[in-house]
Amino acid sequence: MLQLHQVSKTYTINQQLFTALQDINLTIAKGDIFGIVGKSGAGKSTLLRCMNLLERPTQGQVTIDNIELTRLKAVELNQQRKKIGMIFQHFNLLSSRTVFENIALPLEGLYTAAEIATKVTHLLNLVDLKDKTTHYPDQLSGGQKQRVAIARALATEPTILLCDEPTSALDTESTRNILELLQTINRKLGLTIVLITHELDVVKKICKNMAVLDQGLLVETGSVMEIFTQPKSEISKRLIRKQFHLELPDSIRQTIRDPKDTLYAPIIQLTFMGESSKLPVITELIQRFGLSVNILLADIENISDAAVGYLVCQIKGEEAIVKQALDYLHSLPINIEVL
Image 1 (cartoon, rainbow, N blue to C red):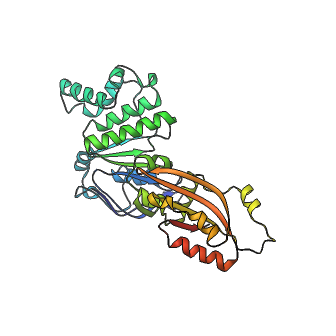
Image 2: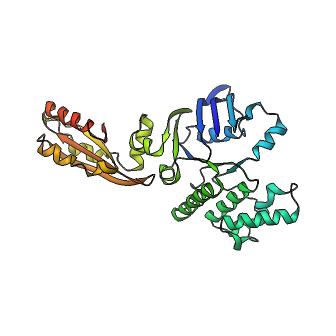
Image 3: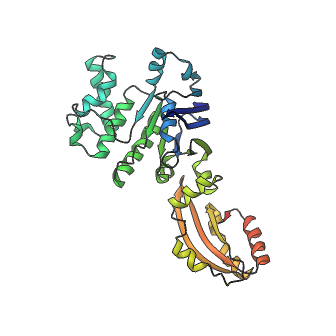
């Protein structure tokens, strides 16, 4: 288990105090694939580096398996760091070393040559690079380089793998392959994976739980399904609308807003999960309440192996009737938000 308790990180830049993280409280269960999302500058990378004390928190505690890293001396901390692997956006491979030699790097001086060969061969098979043993990084694709970086991070048999934007430098196919590899590693090794990204599509595909950062603050945590279907913070709502293209372009907004229209015409977003997708919501709004319904945007996504539907529409009618219809919608097992 990985726990952060009231973790803050401040820097002094040009004689001014800058707060990168403020009072972060977070618990990540053993074996989880945990995503941390937020816009650029939210503090994601700083938070990740605080987890293994590459960045030492200004205040607060970092605890892994009941060992408080922030209390350890340098030698003890280095021993604990061996249990924490890390991969980066730009791979950080040594260009003068072969694939085999890059993976072997953390093992040198700790094992015999024969033991290192056995361990590296096992890792090459795990990441499906056994035919690239003698290749150098500049002979590899981006996805292959990230596989080497993952194998190197696993060389010391860590219990936690920290991933700093691991797919943002990759194409779509390589991204899919790396995410599938991370899932395989999580399943086979029982490894806890913490992944930071600005791409919600990555979180949607492999993470079980997630947190949302905004300007150094932890604004929301929960399961991926909970946050994707019932986001509480405004930043989460904006990120999800952007991810699923649910933001209305100005060109659409201008055509649906008639200043001469006296009818009440709110724009609403409906989120359907599982069986709720079978509810005849639009039919009820038209037939039961006599409202005009204009469907503006719609999408269906697969989240945590469940189908989730998003619908943005404008309903129009007398204000009292529209409010009755909104009360009806709130009574249903769907999430509704007036935009």
